Amino acid sequence: MNIKKRFILQYIRQLLFIGVLLFVLFLGTFTLSIVKLERLDQQLDSIQPSLPVLTDSITHHDGKIQFDPKLLAEVREQGGWLQVIDKAGETIAAYHTPADVPERYTPGELMSYWKAEKDFPYGLYAWIQELDGQTYTLLYGVKNDIAMLKKNLLQQVTWRAGKIEVNESFKQQLNDIHGWIELLDGNGKVLGGYGQRGEAPDHYSLQDLMLRNQYPERYGMQSFTVYDSAAGSTWVIHAPLSTTVASWVNGDTYKEDITVFFWRSAALLVMILILFLLLALWYGHRFGTPILHMIDWLHSLAKGELREPTSPNSNGMPLSRKQSGHLKERFRVHAELIESLAHLTETLQKNEHIRKQLEITREDWIAGVSHDLKTPLSSIMGYAHLMESRTYEWSQAEIREFAAIMREKSTYMDEMINDLTLTYRLKNDAFAFEFIPTDMNEFIDQTIQKWKQHPQFANVPIHYKASEAPITYPIDARYFRRALENLLANAALHNPEGTWINVSIVKNNVSQFVIQIQDNGVGIDKKTKELLFERYYRGTNTDELIQGTGLGMAISKQLVIQHRGQIEIESQLGTGTTISLVFSTTRE
Image 1: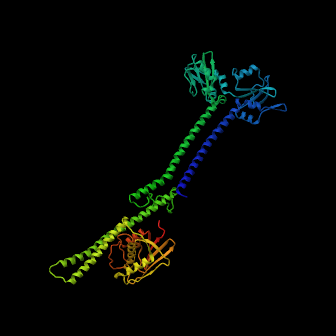
Image 2: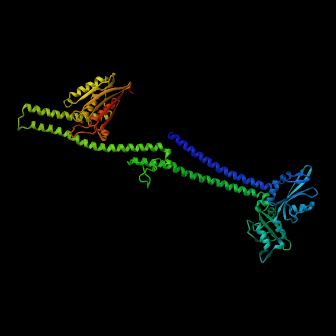
Image 3: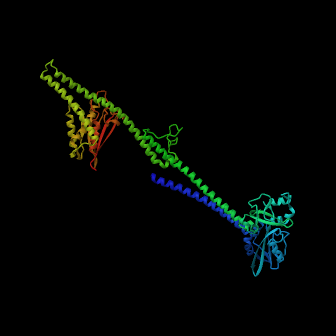
Protein backbone atom coordinates (compact mmCIF):
# COMPACT_ATOMS: atom_id res chain seq x y z
CA MET A 1 0.00 0.00 0.00
CA ASN A 2 1.44 3.36 -1.02
CA ILE A 3 1.77 6.25 1.39
CA LYS A 4 -1.14 8.18 -0.15
CA LYS A 5 -3.61 5.36 0.49
CA ARG A 6 -2.19 4.79 3.95
CA PHE A 7 -2.68 8.46 4.87
CA ILE A 8 -6.24 8.43 3.52
CA LEU A 9 -7.16 5.26 5.41
CA GLN A 10 -5.49 6.51 8.59
CA TYR A 11 -7.42 9.80 8.57
CA ILE A 12 -10.71 8.10 7.64
CA ARG A 13 -10.23 5.62 10.49
CA GLN A 14 -9.54 8.41 12.98
CA LEU A 15 -12.48 10.52 11.78
CA LEU A 16 -14.79 7.50 12.03
CA PHE A 17 -13.55 6.91 15.57
CA ILE A 18 -14.24 10.55 16.48
CA GLY A 19 -17.66 10.40 14.84
CA VAL A 20 -18.63 7.22 16.71
CA LEU A 21 -17.37 8.65 19.98
CA LEU A 22 -19.33 11.88 19.51
CA PHE A 23 -22.41 9.90 18.49
CA VAL A 24 -22.14 7.78 21.64
CA LEU A 25 -21.80 10.90 23.79
CA PHE A 26 -24.79 12.55 22.10
CA LEU A 27 -26.87 9.36 22.28
CA GLY A 28 -26.02 8.95 25.95
CA THR A 29 -27.00 12.52 26.79
CA PHE A 30 -30.14 12.30 24.66
CA THR A 31 -31.12 9.00 26.29
CA LEU A 32 -30.62 10.38 29.80
CA SER A 33 -32.74 13.40 28.91
CA ILE A 34 -35.51 11.21 27.46
CA VAL A 35 -35.44 9.02 30.57
CA LYS A 36 -35.68 12.12 32.73
CA LEU A 37 -38.64 13.43 30.72
CA GLU A 38 -40.36 10.06 30.86
CA ARG A 39 -39.97 9.97 34.62
CA LEU A 40 -41.39 13.47 34.77
CA ASP A 41 -44.33 12.40 32.64
CA GLN A 42 -44.87 9.44 34.91
CA GLN A 43 -44.85 11.72 37.92
CA LEU A 44 -47.24 14.16 36.24
CA ASP A 45 -49.44 11.35 35.03
CA SER A 46 -49.85 10.20 38.65
CA ILE A 47 -51.47 13.52 39.65
CA GLN A 48 -53.89 15.88 37.97
CA PRO A 49 -52.88 15.29 34.34
CA SER A 50 -53.37 11.53 34.82
CA LEU A 51 -56.83 11.76 36.40
CA PRO A 52 -58.48 11.13 33.02
CA VAL A 53 -56.27 8.08 32.62
CA LEU A 54 -57.29 6.86 36.06
CA THR A 55 -60.93 7.48 35.20
CA ASP A 56 -60.55 5.61 31.91
CA SER A 57 -58.97 2.70 33.78
CA ILE A 58 -62.04 2.22 36.02
CA THR A 59 -63.65 -1.17 35.44
CA HIS A 60 -66.73 -2.89 36.90
CA HIS A 61 -66.16 -6.33 38.33
CA ASP A 62 -68.71 -8.11 40.47
CA GLY A 63 -70.39 -4.76 41.09
CA LYS A 64 -67.17 -3.15 42.31
CA ILE A 65 -65.13 -0.38 40.75
CA GLN A 66 -61.45 -1.24 40.22
CA PHE A 67 -58.38 0.72 38.99
CA ASP A 68 -55.35 -0.27 36.98
CA PRO A 69 -52.87 -1.71 39.56
CA LYS A 70 -49.90 0.05 37.94
CA LEU A 71 -51.59 3.45 38.19
CA LEU A 72 -52.55 2.77 41.80
CA ALA A 73 -48.94 1.89 42.57
CA GLU A 74 -47.86 5.26 41.14
CA VAL A 75 -50.45 7.05 43.29
CA ARG A 76 -49.12 5.26 46.37
CA GLU A 77 -45.56 6.22 45.50
CA GLN A 78 -46.64 9.86 45.39
CA GLY A 79 -48.19 9.54 48.87
CA GLY A 80 -51.67 10.25 47.52
CA TRP A 81 -55.11 8.71 47.81
CA LEU A 82 -58.13 8.23 45.54
CA GLN A 83 -61.91 8.38 45.84
CA VAL A 84 -64.64 7.85 43.26
CA ILE A 85 -67.79 9.83 44.10
CA ASP A 86 -71.17 9.51 42.51
CA LYS A 87 -73.65 12.29 41.83
CA ALA A 88 -74.97 12.19 45.39
CA GLY A 89 -71.50 12.68 46.89
CA GLU A 90 -71.24 9.08 48.12
CA THR A 91 -67.86 7.35 47.92
CA ILE A 92 -68.32 4.23 45.83
CA ALA A 93 -64.63 3.33 45.56
CA ALA A 94 -61.50 4.37 47.42
CA TYR A 95 -57.85 3.59 47.51
CA HIS A 96 -55.35 4.35 50.29
CA THR A 97 -57.72 6.89 51.78
CA PRO A 98 -56.73 8.23 55.27
CA ALA A 99 -59.18 7.97 58.16
CA ASP A 100 -59.75 11.73 58.39
CA VAL A 101 -61.08 11.91 54.84
CA PRO A 102 -64.92 11.99 54.65
CA GLU A 103 -66.73 9.10 52.95
CA ARG A 104 -69.59 11.36 51.88
CA TYR A 105 -69.55 15.01 50.73
CA THR A 106 -72.29 17.55 50.43
CA PRO A 107 -71.94 19.79 47.38
CA GLY A 108 -71.02 22.87 49.41
CA GLU A 109 -68.60 20.91 51.65
CA LEU A 110 -66.61 19.46 48.72
CA MET A 111 -66.42 22.87 47.06
CA SER A 112 -65.12 24.47 50.25
CA TYR A 113 -62.43 21.80 50.57
CA TRP A 114 -61.48 22.00 46.88
CA LYS A 115 -61.19 25.83 46.89
CA ALA A 116 -59.45 25.82 50.28
CA GLU A 117 -62.22 27.91 51.79
CA LYS A 118 -62.42 25.46 54.64
CA ASP A 119 -59.49 23.96 56.47
CA PHE A 120 -58.60 20.56 55.02
CA PRO A 121 -55.29 18.74 55.58
CA TYR A 122 -55.07 17.60 51.96
CA GLY A 123 -54.73 19.20 48.60
CA LEU A 124 -57.51 18.09 46.27
CA TYR A 125 -57.54 17.55 42.50
CA ALA A 126 -60.70 16.47 40.70
CA TRP A 127 -61.79 15.12 37.33
CA ILE A 128 -65.35 14.57 36.16
CA GLN A 129 -66.07 12.11 33.42
CA GLU A 130 -69.00 10.07 32.14
CA LEU A 131 -68.31 6.37 31.81
CA ASP A 132 -70.75 3.61 30.85
CA GLY A 133 -73.68 5.98 31.26
CA GLN A 134 -72.59 7.01 34.74
CA THR A 135 -71.00 10.30 35.77
CA TYR A 136 -68.07 9.92 38.14
CA THR A 137 -65.98 12.40 40.07
CA LEU A 138 -62.46 11.21 40.72
CA LEU A 139 -60.73 12.88 43.66
CA TYR A 140 -57.00 12.77 44.10
CA GLY A 141 -55.68 13.98 47.42
CA VAL A 142 -52.24 14.47 48.86
CA LYS A 143 -51.00 15.69 52.21
CA ASN A 144 -51.02 19.51 52.39
CA ASP A 145 -48.57 20.55 55.07
CA ILE A 146 -48.97 24.24 54.27
CA ALA A 147 -52.70 24.04 54.95
CA MET A 148 -51.96 22.69 58.43
CA LEU A 149 -49.49 25.49 59.04
CA LYS A 150 -52.02 28.03 57.89
CA LYS A 151 -54.64 26.59 60.23
CA ASN A 152 -52.47 26.88 63.35
CA LEU A 153 -50.44 29.92 62.39
CA LEU A 154 -51.99 32.50 64.74
CA GLN A 155 -51.69 30.09 67.69
CA GLN A 156 -48.04 29.16 66.94
CA VAL A 157 -46.36 32.51 66.25
CA THR A 158 -46.32 35.92 67.93
CA TRP A 159 -44.90 39.37 67.18
CA ARG A 160 -43.10 40.72 70.19
CA ALA A 161 -40.62 43.60 70.46
CA GLY A 162 -40.08 43.79 66.70
CA LYS A 163 -39.29 40.09 66.44
CA ILE A 164 -41.22 36.97 65.37
CA GLU A 165 -41.29 34.21 67.96
CA VAL A 166 -42.15 30.65 66.86
CA ASN A 167 -42.78 27.61 69.06
CA GLU A 168 -40.84 24.41 68.47
CA SER A 169 -43.57 22.31 66.83
CA PHE A 170 -44.40 25.02 64.26
CA LYS A 171 -40.70 25.60 63.69
CA GLN A 172 -40.20 21.91 62.89
CA GLN A 173 -43.16 21.85 60.51
CA LEU A 174 -41.86 24.95 58.74
CA ASN A 175 -38.39 23.44 58.37
CA ASP A 176 -39.85 20.22 56.98
CA ILE A 177 -41.29 22.06 54.00
CA HIS A 178 -38.25 24.42 53.73
CA GLY A 179 -40.61 27.37 54.18
CA TRP A 180 -40.52 30.73 55.87
CA ILE A 181 -43.02 33.29 57.16
CA GLU A 182 -43.29 37.05 56.95
CA LEU A 183 -45.40 39.63 58.82
CA LEU A 184 -46.86 42.54 56.83
CA ASP A 185 -48.37 45.73 58.24
CA GLY A 186 -51.60 47.27 56.95
CA ASN A 187 -49.76 48.83 53.99
CA GLY A 188 -48.07 45.60 52.92
CA LYS A 189 -44.63 46.50 54.29
CA VAL A 190 -42.59 43.58 55.63
CA LEU A 191 -42.11 44.02 59.38
CA GLY A 192 -40.09 40.89 59.93
CA GLY A 193 -39.65 37.26 58.97
CA TYR A 194 -38.61 33.87 60.19
CA GLY A 195 -36.76 31.12 58.30
CA GLN A 196 -34.41 31.18 55.34
CA ARG A 197 -36.04 33.89 53.33
CA GLY A 198 -35.78 33.43 49.59
CA GLU A 199 -36.06 36.05 46.91
CA ALA A 200 -39.01 38.16 48.10
CA PRO A 201 -39.73 41.90 48.09
CA ASP A 202 -39.70 44.14 51.16
CA HIS A 203 -43.18 45.38 50.32
CA TYR A 204 -46.24 43.60 48.89
CA SER A 205 -49.13 45.25 47.12
CA LEU A 206 -52.58 43.75 46.99
CA GLN A 207 -51.96 42.66 43.43
CA ASP A 208 -48.67 41.00 44.43
CA LEU A 209 -50.35 38.80 47.02
CA MET A 210 -53.16 37.87 44.66
CA LEU A 211 -50.82 36.99 41.80
CA ARG A 212 -48.50 34.98 44.05
CA ASN A 213 -51.46 33.02 45.37
CA GLN A 214 -53.06 32.48 41.95
CA TYR A 215 -49.90 31.87 39.83
CA PRO A 216 -47.23 30.35 42.11
CA GLU A 217 -45.30 28.92 39.14
CA ARG A 218 -44.31 32.44 38.07
CA TYR A 219 -42.46 32.98 41.33
CA GLY A 220 -41.20 29.47 41.98
CA MET A 221 -43.01 29.26 45.33
CA GLN A 222 -46.41 29.02 46.95
CA SER A 223 -47.65 31.85 49.13
CA PHE A 224 -50.58 31.61 51.58
CA THR A 225 -51.93 34.50 53.66
CA VAL A 226 -53.52 34.56 57.10
CA TYR A 227 -55.15 37.81 58.18
CA ASP A 228 -54.96 38.79 61.86
CA SER A 229 -58.06 41.00 62.24
CA ALA A 230 -57.22 41.92 65.84
CA ALA A 231 -53.82 43.39 64.92
CA GLY A 232 -54.70 44.49 61.39
CA SER A 233 -51.61 42.67 60.05
CA THR A 234 -51.11 39.86 57.53
CA TRP A 235 -49.02 36.74 57.91
CA VAL A 236 -47.59 35.19 54.71
CA ILE A 237 -46.36 31.59 54.50
CA HIS A 238 -43.91 30.82 51.67
CA ALA A 239 -42.82 27.36 50.49
CA PRO A 240 -40.80 26.30 47.41
CA LEU A 241 -42.92 24.71 44.72
CA SER A 242 -40.55 21.75 44.49
CA THR A 243 -41.63 20.61 47.97
CA THR A 244 -45.36 20.51 47.20
CA VAL A 245 -47.66 18.62 44.94
CA ALA A 246 -48.49 21.88 43.20
CA SER A 247 -44.97 21.94 41.82
CA TRP A 248 -45.92 19.12 39.48
CA VAL A 249 -49.27 20.63 38.61
CA ASN A 250 -47.90 24.12 37.96
CA GLY A 251 -45.02 22.87 35.82
CA ASP A 252 -42.07 23.74 38.03
CA THR A 253 -40.67 20.29 37.53
CA TYR A 254 -40.67 20.99 33.80
CA LYS A 255 -38.60 24.09 34.44
CA GLU A 256 -36.26 22.09 36.60
CA ASP A 257 -35.96 19.38 33.97
CA ILE A 258 -35.35 21.94 31.22
CA THR A 259 -32.61 23.40 33.38
CA VAL A 260 -31.13 19.95 33.85
CA PHE A 261 -31.38 19.31 30.12
CA PHE A 262 -29.69 22.65 29.43
CA TRP A 263 -26.83 21.89 31.80
CA ARG A 264 -26.45 18.42 30.36
CA SER A 265 -26.29 19.88 26.87
CA ALA A 266 -23.72 22.39 28.09
CA ALA A 267 -21.79 19.54 29.71
CA LEU A 268 -21.95 17.61 26.43
CA LEU A 269 -20.59 20.64 24.57
CA VAL A 270 -17.77 21.00 27.10
CA MET A 271 -17.01 17.29 26.76
CA ILE A 272 -16.91 17.64 22.98
CA LEU A 273 -14.55 20.62 23.23
CA ILE A 274 -12.34 18.73 25.67
CA LEU A 275 -12.45 15.71 23.37
CA PHE A 276 -11.42 17.82 20.39
CA LEU A 277 -8.64 19.37 22.45
CA LEU A 278 -7.38 15.95 23.49
CA LEU A 279 -7.67 14.69 19.93
CA ALA A 280 -5.81 17.76 18.67
CA LEU A 281 -3.02 17.05 21.16
CA TRP A 282 -3.07 13.38 20.18
CA TYR A 283 -3.01 14.22 16.47
CA GLY A 284 -0.24 16.71 17.05
CA HIS A 285 1.78 14.09 18.90
CA ARG A 286 1.01 11.20 16.55
CA PHE A 287 1.27 12.99 13.21
CA GLY A 288 3.16 16.16 14.11
CA THR A 289 6.07 14.46 15.86
CA PRO A 290 7.11 12.37 12.81
CA ILE A 291 6.77 15.37 10.49
CA LEU A 292 8.81 17.62 12.82
CA HIS A 293 11.37 14.83 13.14
CA MET A 294 11.68 14.58 9.34
CA ILE A 295 11.99 18.38 9.08
CA ASP A 296 14.78 18.32 11.71
CA TRP A 297 16.35 15.49 9.77
CA LEU A 298 16.33 17.54 6.56
CA HIS A 299 17.75 20.54 8.43
CA SER A 300 20.55 18.32 9.74
CA LEU A 301 21.30 17.10 6.21
CA ALA A 302 21.28 20.70 4.95
CA LYS A 303 23.83 21.63 7.62
CA GLY A 304 26.04 18.70 6.63
CA GLU A 305 25.15 16.54 9.64
CA LEU A 306 24.64 13.33 7.69
CA ARG A 307 22.72 11.31 10.26
CA GLU A 308 19.21 10.92 11.61
CA PRO A 309 18.54 13.02 14.75
CA THR A 310 18.54 10.97 17.95
CA SER A 311 16.32 11.29 21.00
CA PRO A 312 17.82 12.29 24.38
CA ASN A 313 19.05 9.44 26.56
CA SER A 314 18.65 6.97 23.69
CA ASN A 315 22.29 5.85 23.48
CA GLY A 316 22.47 7.16 19.93
CA MET A 317 19.27 5.40 18.77
CA PRO A 318 17.38 7.40 16.09
CA LEU A 319 14.16 9.03 17.29
CA SER A 320 12.04 7.01 14.84
CA ARG A 321 13.36 3.61 15.93
CA LYS A 322 12.80 1.28 18.85
CA GLN A 323 15.70 -0.41 20.58
CA SER A 324 15.01 -3.40 18.33
CA GLY A 325 15.57 -1.20 15.28
CA HIS A 326 11.95 -1.33 14.08
CA LEU A 327 9.95 1.82 13.41
CA LYS A 328 7.87 3.18 16.28
CA GLU A 329 4.09 2.97 15.92
CA ARG A 330 3.48 6.66 15.14
CA PHE A 331 6.22 6.63 12.48
CA ARG A 332 4.86 3.64 10.53
CA VAL A 333 2.37 5.69 8.53
CA HIS A 334 5.40 7.64 7.22
CA ALA A 335 7.44 4.48 6.58
CA GLU A 336 8.19 5.27 2.93
CA LEU A 337 9.33 8.81 3.76
CA ILE A 338 11.47 7.58 6.66
CA GLU A 339 13.07 4.91 4.48
CA SER A 340 13.65 7.43 1.68
CA LEU A 341 15.34 9.83 4.09
CA ALA A 342 17.42 6.98 5.50
CA HIS A 343 18.45 6.00 1.97
CA LEU A 344 19.23 9.63 1.14
CA THR A 345 21.31 9.95 4.31
CA GLU A 346 23.21 6.76 3.49
CA THR A 347 23.82 7.95 -0.07
CA LEU A 348 25.04 11.34 1.14
CA GLN A 349 27.34 9.62 3.62
CA LYS A 350 28.80 7.47 0.86
CA ASN A 351 29.14 10.46 -1.45
CA GLU A 352 30.79 12.47 1.30
CA HIS A 353 33.20 9.60 1.94
CA ILE A 354 33.97 9.35 -1.78
CA ARG A 355 34.32 13.13 -2.01
CA LYS A 356 36.85 13.16 0.79
CA GLN A 357 38.73 10.30 -0.81
CA LEU A 358 38.68 12.07 -4.17
CA GLU A 359 39.86 15.26 -2.49
CA ILE A 360 42.85 13.41 -1.10
CA THR A 361 43.32 11.60 -4.40
CA ARG A 362 43.13 14.85 -6.37
CA GLU A 363 45.77 16.42 -4.19
CA ASP A 364 47.97 13.37 -4.68
CA TRP A 365 47.19 13.47 -8.40
CA ILE A 366 48.13 17.13 -8.68
CA ALA A 367 51.39 16.40 -6.91
CA GLY A 368 52.00 13.38 -9.14
CA VAL A 369 51.13 15.15 -12.39
CA SER A 370 53.24 18.12 -11.35
CA HIS A 371 56.11 15.75 -10.77
CA ASP A 372 55.43 13.87 -14.04
CA LEU A 373 55.40 17.13 -15.98
CA LYS A 374 58.38 18.57 -14.15
CA THR A 375 60.57 15.52 -14.73
CA PRO A 376 60.45 15.52 -18.56
CA LEU A 377 60.49 19.32 -18.57
CA SER A 378 63.65 19.24 -16.49
CA SER A 379 65.18 16.80 -18.99
CA ILE A 380 64.21 19.05 -21.90
CA MET A 381 65.60 22.12 -20.15
CA GLY A 382 68.78 20.26 -19.24
CA TYR A 383 69.48 19.09 -22.78
CA ALA A 384 68.59 22.52 -24.11
CA HIS A 385 71.18 24.11 -21.79
CA LEU A 386 73.76 21.56 -22.94
CA MET A 387 73.11 22.29 -26.55
CA GLU A 388 73.17 26.02 -25.87
CA SER A 389 76.52 25.88 -24.05
CA ARG A 390 79.56 27.26 -26.00
CA THR A 391 82.10 25.43 -23.89
CA TYR A 392 81.65 22.29 -25.91
CA GLU A 393 81.00 21.52 -29.51
CA TRP A 394 78.45 18.69 -29.83
CA SER A 395 78.61 16.25 -32.64
CA GLN A 396 75.68 15.66 -34.99
CA ALA A 397 75.08 12.24 -33.43
CA GLU A 398 74.94 13.75 -29.92
CA ILE A 399 72.61 16.50 -31.07
CA ARG A 400 70.27 13.93 -32.65
CA GLU A 401 70.35 11.90 -29.41
CA PHE A 402 69.49 15.00 -27.37
CA ALA A 403 66.74 15.91 -29.81
CA ALA A 404 65.24 12.40 -29.65
CA ILE A 405 65.09 12.56 -25.85
CA MET A 406 63.56 16.02 -25.93
CA ARG A 407 60.97 14.86 -28.51
CA GLU A 408 60.06 11.82 -26.38
CA LYS A 409 59.63 13.96 -23.27
CA SER A 410 57.63 16.55 -25.20
CA THR A 411 55.36 13.83 -26.61
CA TYR A 412 54.74 12.51 -23.12
CA MET A 413 53.86 15.99 -21.88
CA ASP A 414 51.59 16.55 -24.89
CA GLU A 415 49.73 13.30 -24.16
CA MET A 416 49.17 14.38 -20.58
CA ILE A 417 47.82 17.75 -21.66
CA ASN A 418 45.59 16.10 -24.27
CA ASP A 419 44.21 13.73 -21.60
CA LEU A 420 43.37 16.67 -19.36
CA THR A 421 41.65 18.46 -22.20
CA LEU A 422 39.74 15.37 -23.30
CA THR A 423 38.41 14.44 -19.86
CA TYR A 424 37.06 17.92 -19.20
CA ARG A 425 35.46 18.13 -22.63
CA LEU A 426 33.82 14.74 -22.07
CA LYS A 427 32.61 15.74 -18.66
CA ASN A 428 31.01 18.94 -19.99
CA ASP A 429 29.55 17.30 -23.14
CA ALA A 430 31.59 19.70 -25.25
CA PHE A 431 32.64 17.06 -27.74
CA ALA A 432 31.45 16.13 -31.21
CA PHE A 433 31.44 12.44 -32.12
CA GLU A 434 31.01 10.96 -35.58
CA PHE A 435 29.20 7.65 -35.19
CA ILE A 436 29.52 5.24 -38.11
CA PRO A 437 28.08 1.68 -38.23
CA THR A 438 31.07 -0.63 -37.80
CA ASP A 439 31.73 -4.37 -37.82
CA MET A 440 32.71 -4.80 -34.17
CA ASN A 441 34.41 -8.21 -34.60
CA GLU A 442 36.85 -6.85 -37.17
CA PHE A 443 37.28 -3.50 -35.40
CA ILE A 444 38.32 -5.08 -32.07
CA ASP A 445 40.75 -7.46 -33.86
CA GLN A 446 42.40 -4.53 -35.65
CA THR A 447 42.61 -2.53 -32.41
CA ILE A 448 44.36 -5.40 -30.60
CA GLN A 449 46.85 -5.90 -33.46
CA LYS A 450 47.69 -2.20 -33.52
CA TRP A 451 48.03 -2.10 -29.73
CA LYS A 452 50.50 -5.04 -29.81
CA GLN A 453 52.72 -3.10 -32.20
CA HIS A 454 53.63 -0.77 -29.35
CA PRO A 455 57.08 -1.84 -28.08
CA GLN A 456 55.91 -1.66 -24.47
CA PHE A 457 53.16 -4.26 -25.07
CA ALA A 458 54.75 -6.44 -27.78
CA ASN A 459 55.39 -9.36 -25.42
CA VAL A 460 52.05 -9.23 -23.53
CA PRO A 461 50.17 -12.57 -23.97
CA ILE A 462 46.79 -11.60 -25.39
CA HIS A 463 44.04 -13.70 -26.98
CA TYR A 464 40.97 -12.51 -28.85
CA LYS A 465 37.71 -14.44 -29.37
CA ALA A 466 35.26 -12.94 -31.83
CA SER A 467 31.52 -13.38 -31.78
CA GLU A 468 30.04 -16.15 -33.89
CA ALA A 469 27.23 -13.83 -34.95
CA PRO A 470 27.98 -10.62 -36.86
CA ILE A 471 27.67 -7.45 -34.80
CA THR A 472 27.32 -4.01 -36.34
CA TYR A 473 27.25 -0.99 -34.06
CA PRO A 474 27.66 2.78 -34.64
CA ILE A 475 30.89 4.07 -33.10
CA ASP A 476 33.45 6.84 -33.45
CA ALA A 477 36.39 4.61 -34.35
CA ARG A 478 39.09 6.96 -33.06
CA TYR A 479 37.71 7.39 -29.57
CA PHE A 480 36.29 3.88 -29.20
CA ARG A 481 39.79 2.57 -30.01
CA ARG A 482 41.19 4.97 -27.40
CA ALA A 483 38.85 3.49 -24.75
CA LEU A 484 39.88 -0.12 -25.60
CA GLU A 485 43.59 0.74 -25.68
CA ASN A 486 43.35 2.40 -22.24
CA LEU A 487 41.69 -0.69 -20.78
CA LEU A 488 44.24 -3.02 -22.36
CA ALA A 489 47.14 -0.85 -21.20
CA ASN A 490 45.75 -0.79 -17.66
CA ALA A 491 45.56 -4.61 -17.60
CA ALA A 492 49.13 -4.88 -18.88
CA LEU A 493 50.81 -2.15 -16.82
CA HIS A 494 49.25 -2.95 -13.46
CA ASN A 495 49.92 -6.69 -13.45
CA PRO A 496 53.16 -8.70 -13.23
CA GLU A 497 55.01 -9.68 -16.39
CA GLY A 498 53.52 -12.74 -18.06
CA THR A 499 49.92 -11.95 -17.12
CA TRP A 500 47.67 -13.06 -19.98
CA ILE A 501 44.76 -11.02 -21.30
CA ASN A 502 41.63 -12.47 -22.92
CA VAL A 503 39.40 -10.23 -25.05
CA SER A 504 36.03 -11.50 -26.23
CA ILE A 505 32.85 -10.16 -27.76
CA VAL A 506 29.58 -11.98 -27.19
CA LYS A 507 26.08 -11.27 -28.45
CA ASN A 508 23.83 -12.05 -25.48
CA ASN A 509 20.54 -11.58 -27.32
CA VAL A 510 19.05 -9.83 -30.32
CA SER A 511 19.55 -6.35 -28.88
CA GLN A 512 22.67 -6.59 -26.66
CA PHE A 513 26.35 -7.50 -26.92
CA VAL A 514 29.21 -7.46 -24.40
CA ILE A 515 32.94 -6.83 -24.82
CA GLN A 516 35.01 -8.43 -22.06
CA ILE A 517 38.64 -7.75 -21.14
CA GLN A 518 39.80 -10.38 -18.66
CA ASP A 519 43.19 -10.95 -17.05
CA ASN A 520 44.60 -13.43 -14.53
CA GLY A 521 46.60 -10.82 -12.68
CA VAL A 522 46.76 -9.86 -9.02
CA GLY A 523 43.25 -8.36 -8.99
CA ILE A 524 42.29 -5.15 -7.23
CA ASP A 525 41.00 -4.39 -3.75
CA LYS A 526 37.60 -2.91 -2.92
CA LYS A 527 38.85 0.65 -2.51
CA THR A 528 40.63 0.63 -5.85
CA LYS A 529 37.57 -0.90 -7.56
CA GLU A 530 35.37 1.92 -6.22
CA LEU A 531 37.76 4.63 -7.43
CA LEU A 532 39.13 2.99 -10.56
CA PHE A 533 37.04 5.06 -12.98
CA GLU A 534 37.30 8.31 -11.03
CA ARG A 535 39.40 11.17 -12.29
CA TYR A 536 42.80 11.76 -10.66
CA TYR A 537 43.02 8.20 -9.29
CA ARG A 538 46.26 6.41 -10.16
CA GLY A 539 46.14 2.97 -8.60
CA THR A 540 48.72 0.21 -8.88
CA ASN A 541 49.08 -3.28 -7.56
CA THR A 542 52.85 -3.41 -8.08
CA ASP A 543 55.73 -1.79 -6.37
CA GLU A 544 56.92 -0.19 -9.61
CA LEU A 545 56.55 3.49 -10.28
CA ILE A 546 53.71 3.85 -12.80
CA GLN A 547 53.72 7.14 -14.61
CA GLY A 548 50.52 8.54 -16.04
CA THR A 549 47.87 11.15 -15.59
CA GLY A 550 45.41 8.93 -13.72
CA LEU A 551 42.80 9.92 -16.29
CA GLY A 552 42.97 6.90 -18.62
CA MET A 553 40.27 4.79 -16.94
CA ALA A 554 38.02 7.82 -16.35
CA ILE A 555 38.36 8.71 -20.05
CA SER A 556 37.52 5.13 -21.04
CA LYS A 557 34.36 5.16 -18.92
CA GLN A 558 33.22 8.49 -20.38
CA LEU A 559 33.88 7.29 -23.92
CA VAL A 560 31.87 4.10 -23.32
CA ILE A 561 28.98 6.13 -21.91
CA GLN A 562 29.12 8.46 -24.95
CA HIS A 563 28.72 5.32 -27.08
CA ARG A 564 25.53 4.47 -25.09
CA GLY A 565 27.19 1.68 -23.18
CA GLN A 566 27.85 0.68 -19.59
CA ILE A 567 31.10 -0.39 -17.99
CA GLU A 568 31.20 -2.99 -15.23
CA ILE A 569 34.06 -4.48 -13.24
CA GLU A 570 34.52 -7.70 -11.32
CA SER A 571 37.71 -8.40 -9.44
CA GLN A 572 39.16 -10.17 -6.43
CA LEU A 573 42.68 -10.10 -5.10
CA GLY A 574 44.68 -13.01 -6.49
CA THR A 575 42.14 -14.06 -9.12
CA GLY A 576 42.39 -11.32 -11.72
CA THR A 577 40.00 -8.72 -13.11
CA THR A 578 37.19 -8.74 -15.68
CA ILE A 579 35.92 -5.52 -17.25
CA SER A 580 32.69 -5.74 -19.25
CA LEU A 581 31.45 -3.18 -21.77
CA VAL A 582 27.71 -3.67 -22.32
CA PHE A 583 25.98 -2.15 -25.36
CA SER A 584 22.44 -2.25 -26.61
CA THR A 585 21.85 -2.32 -30.35
CA THR A 586 18.38 -0.79 -29.81
CA ARG A 587 19.13 2.92 -29.70
CA GLU A 588 16.70 5.30 -27.96
